[in-house]
Amino acid sequence: MGFDNAMWHFDEGVIGLFGQWNVYSTVLVTFLIGIVTYHLSTRTEPDTHPMLLARQAQGSPVRQEGESPVYRSRSAPHGMPLNPGLDVRDPGVSKWAKGRDGDLRDIWRRAVGGVPETEAPTGHAAASAAASAVPKPTVGARGKILTSYGTDSVVETSLEDITRQINLIGQHILDQGGARVAIYLPNSVEFLASLFACSFYNMTAILLPFDQKDDAVLVSMLRRSAADTVITAPGCFPFDTVVQSYPALRQLIWVVDEGSAHLDWNEVPKGMGGSVNVSTWQDVVNDAPQAAGRELPPLEGQSQPRDVTIFWEAYRDENNESAATSVSSAPEEMVRFTSGNIVSAVAAQLFAVPSAQRIGPSDLFLPADSLTHTHTLVLTLAALYSNASVVLNSVAPRAADLSMATRGIAPTVIVASPSAALATHNEAIRLLGNGALASFFLNWQTRALTEGGVIPAATSFVSRFFDSARPAVGKTPGKLRLLYVAERAAAGTPALSATVLSNLRIFTGARVIYALAGAKVAGAAAQTAFYDYRVAPGKYAPFGSPLSSTEYLVRSKGSHEITDDKNEGEIVIRGPSVVGSEAALGVIGVIRDDNTLAYV
Image (tube, rainbow, N blue to C red; front, top):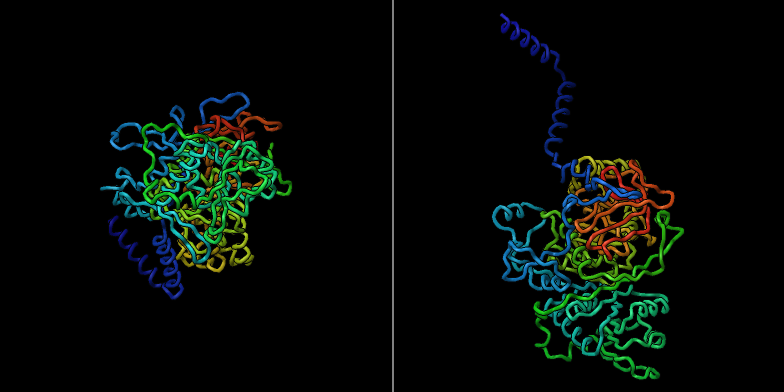
């Protein structure tokens, strides 16, 4: 009887429902089905689990008086050593043996040799790579070295030709008694070749910030670094002033463009007494036999490369918002990085990118900031080690925004200055306008990033709304997939907000990695996680967690006292990528609830 009564009530309910059905019922049910279908068809899994973003670093179980706990990346837990190098395995060495940390020479050897067999995907890894958005390299795949001269002119320099330049220039400087080589060049093939020549031929490389307005500053940097050789370009180097003010200069190598190659650049001006040996890069390379310099020096018997000296241009800018975070600043700080500092930072950047998104031969890498900045240099070396193609543009570091820096090329990975990134964002916001519809769609896309945890698809209806405001980054819009930006601690660069970074992800369709760089830290001290799209409250965007080569803490400074429930003080970075293994950055920071680092 109970079952019969239940069926009778069910039958009555169905009859009652359809007896009252009308056109409004049809519209409401259709609308409901449409909403459910839309959410089921467009739903995507977040790029990473939210719990992985809730605690991005591990704090030490104890702390020292006046200091916060020491925070490390989850990939380098306490009790284990931080990443010291590239783990290079020489030919014939067992794959089970521990590899060498490596040095700058191994980076160029890897660039010339291509992707090794041990890193090519096979079996299940190959199937996973095929499903990934980033194509995985095959054995022996190599990148290219390109130079962009404008909207239509891109010239490739073969890796074999660059190897020849490395050998011939390095041997020439060595034969002339050079030991400390100042490189005063814009981003160029000759810049990279000079750096590697110093590494292979055991000379100290001194990277001078290019285009100095004050000759006295340039002379001061040469004197402080004790340079005996300068590699530079005509028109930007005050030869007469330098020789008169700095008599220790013994050798000068001009890098001459094709339009000026017919002139006699070897002539020493009268009154110099012939104390400076002047030659041109082109003469050194072209006068040697074609078969000379084709092979790199052997591994056996080589000593550790000498240091790389870099000048950190720091200054206090009262009109800059980021200057409020400064504790101290110096006009120019000369820092000597060991090869170990640099390769540790390179290895950390390689490890910071998930394997499915690693930079490889299918990428075109553009350093749109000066290579004399260690953050840009380390990422460029990481791109070379990953066998990515690298395009160099001498004017890109001085470009106002990313659209100007990428004319004529289609990069997939860019390193940009904070000012260029901010200018690109502001121009996109201006083109988008301040209307209610623009704000609605911008908030919609922001929620897709922060709540959905995915980069919005460029082909969606909402994304197409931003086409008119989208910055023209490269000649192939939408190809950019990764943008690196670094705040330079105590250097007066504009500190970006989390909203600016989120908007850049929406406008460019690329992931934005925001880092904190310091004078004595090779590469980055900390940087945002690859899949972290959250918009944190506050004036300044957080810098994320430490890399596998660094650890950080904050130390009491002035009115900023460390307590059990307040981690706010001067930022201190430790690790193998730091000069002297520890450096205070001279800025006030705070450890956030997710254990990431940020300005106060």
